[in-house]
Amino acid sequence: MQSSILPTYKRSNLSFVKGKGSYLITKNGKKYLDFASGLAVNSLGHCNSELIKVLNNQSKKMWHISNAFQIPEQEELAKKLVKLTFADKVFFCNSGAESVEAAIKIARAYHQIKEKKNKFKIITIKGSFHGRTLATISASGQKKMIDGFKPLLDGFVQVEFGDHESIEKAVDNKTAAIMVEPILGEGGIKIIPNQCLEGLRKLCNKKKILLIFDEVQCGIGRTGKFFSYQWSKIEPDILATAKGMGGGFPIGACLVTDKVSKGMKFGSHGSTFGGNPLACSVAKRVIEIISEKKFLNDLNQKATFFVNKLEAIKNTYNHLIEEIRGRGFLLGIKIKINNSIFIEKLRNNGLLSVGANENIIRILPPLNVTNKDLKIALKIIEKTCIDINSKK
Image 1 (cartoon, rainbow, N blue to C red):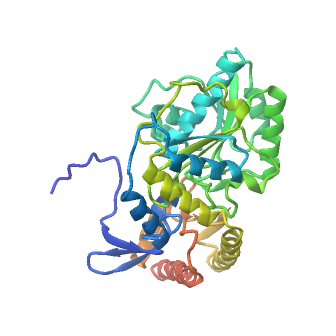
Image 2: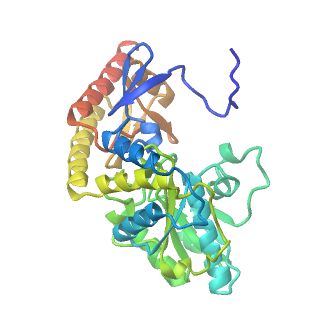
């Protein structure tokens, strides 16, 4: 039967009727260990009882109200994010792309309105992923995303990953900001080292431009800190986040300092659904759980155990696995065969994962995954290596 859905996704034939914890379950009752987590969205697993309770309670009071009115749930969530981070102000939206769009507008407004300077260019990293709107594909500049959608939005300059000299040379009198993912997700789980982030901060200070972090995928506890930048000694001026923030409920946010927010006035930006009571109530509980010191300590202990075991598997099957990348539970396995083949075989063995550039398999378990489920995943990964070996 022909689908009525626009064919913009390459979907597997799998379909699920329910989820619980780290598992998804088909109509026939077959269970799959979900280490894709809706692309790092289901941060506390499927049908988390705490989130269901909050969602049910709020749904009986109020779902949506216009931002023309005061929204206490939004204020409470903003205060929590401000307390946990560098930020003084928060803008709420519905997705990662929207949060990055807000970051771009805030950066341009800061220079053009507050500083009275026509600075609009933003420097980004080749291979990065910032979303699928016209502005965010212009920021990423990836051929596979921009083909068919030109002309692109002007004002974005891409430089090679790790080429600090090129970044510095790219800064001119029209540059407004440098925007990076502290860990490139779609780009191949590539960590920007702390000293490089610190170098970017110094460069931005020197050139009087802004530093924007896109933590849509690597934020909200995914790397073992509440935000990934917190592994370093520096802070950005603007930060975009989403994905795991709502634990599966759509919400995004753009965080900014007081100084940099001054260019945003009444009417300069908005969102119909952004910051509605339902989304903010769920996100508030997600953040309360994930930001707890014990939760993050447990996450890091489990992640260290898991990565050590993955390294052992890599050493045994180094003809199949080239490298283990990432931090916390934002992990990548670089495969020497086509990653789509390996992903399919993992799926056949009961483990769901997702690919990324540079022939990477992304491993994104729920942040509250159990040690038992991590051990099951390791067995499936090793079994998949054995299965591939046996067919050679």
